[in-house]
Image (cartoon, rainbow, N blue to C red; front, side, top):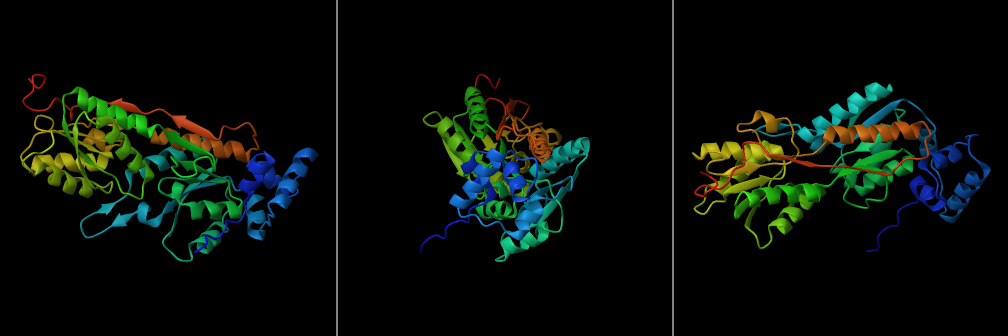
Length: 354
């Protein structure tokens, strides 16, 4: 079955004309502050791509509401079952960073859940967003890699920025970190302590970042240590179940790396429930340096991801774009840092273990 060709959007026009998203928006809305040569380039690109702007797109592109929204899939925004209710800590930190920055710039910030699983998703999203005047939208994983969502935003002419995208990374502005290098640093830390049989609790397949961490960890350990994998879902309950599965075996790993801190916390509780002591009997490490990394005992060795700083960078970009700045970097990359705490130590029975 042939794949339906995607309709050109104002992002495509901007790329072809070699101008900013905002310049295309101003041309669409007959803004007087557009140089004649730029206007001509935009109109030529529109003609060559056979671009037909929708009324909704023109309406949204011309409105200013001093508001920025974080779009979140309902399934990521809040999960609930018989065992527990879960609110993704990554999104908590992202919202805190975005809200603080918006207040400084005099902007409103709100979270807008959407239902990606709905068959009427694109139309529902357009109806939802047409009710408010937005200066921009932030997309966090996994929403930042949902290409139909990007298509819908571009059709509406809404500026957006992606947090840690993994697909079509040059398609739109983004803020990211060195996920691969941060994970390698964790692998090297565990190897330096002497661990040679290491378990990993993976993240959900729908998150590209989880896949990057898996690939990086596997490649860093190649030929240097045995890797035992177990699936996970980024939740405490998932880490608890995976931790028990990895540790309740005869030849258990001497260290566990969980793809996020909540699963690492679950693995620590799993070890305790089996009569093991962290890190004397098994080391446990995580990723993100979220609040639970400080609250769990022992405090968690992890990779610090500057989530609030990423949110702030995203807000700064959208505010600058709304204020018609043209000299903006499309990609911002922030560093990660290995944070060593009490949850990691040499494996039991080694000289270093004492």
